Amino acid sequence: MATLRDFLREGRLSALEARMLWQHVLQVPRSWLIAHDTDTLSEDSVQAYRQLEERRLAGEPMAYILGMREFMGHEFLVSPAVLIPRPETELLVEKAVLCLQGRSDVAVLDLGTGSGAIAISLALALPQAQVVATDISNEALQVARENASRLGANVEFHQGSWYQALPSGKVFDLILSNPPYIAEGDPHLVQGDLCFEPANALTDGADGLAAYREIVAGAPEHLQPGGSLYVEHGWEQADQVCNLLRQAGFRDVASLPDLAGILRVSGGHL
Ligand code: GLN
Image (cartoon, rainbow, N blue to C red; front, top):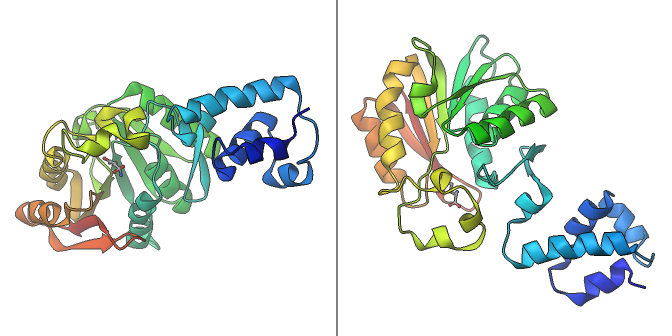
């Protein structure tokens, strides 16, 4: 009769991932696993675990297997229709919070929201802000809407490509985006978690800057005078994104490093 201890000893997955899958199968907290590691496991739960383990061994990301990923301290539902929220994207939300803190009556736009992680975290951090989010994918918007309702965030969602999703005449104090920024043919696209994620959330199918050109070009028309734009980008794109911003008339253009010291977010104001 197999026990949790036996499964952890097998070593087919790392102990961390095996524990995460067992928590999911048994619907118990981590402390339960520690206290019950010599209990006999039921046949059904062993079977359920083996199925998840197979998926993981085939390379499927943990977040899709569990259907969840934590971001800014909130649990977000994720499915293969959306990019898995990344820890480095928290920098973009933190910058936005700093930018708007203490201001009342502000409107924020998140372009290409995916799971809604950025827009929803911001709406929860700044309940006085009006938060609007767009995505081209209806499937992604379903996930984002469900996350907003589960987490009690007030976000207005619109479907469409970048600014085309918006009702006409709408202007914002701050625009944010974590657009697809990996260049077509980049070898990372066929490695690890990325090959399970939606391609159109990862790559622009071009040089990796196509989304920034569109987002930056449309920003002046959709920002209040003095309004700001901040975007996440790849490790080697800070200079190019900053140049696009300057060429479009943005001022005080600057880049911020993520926790790994990589310039990850750039922006400025009009
Ligand atoms: N940060 C992601 C990665 O490199 C890419 C996300 C994106 O293209 N916006 O894995």
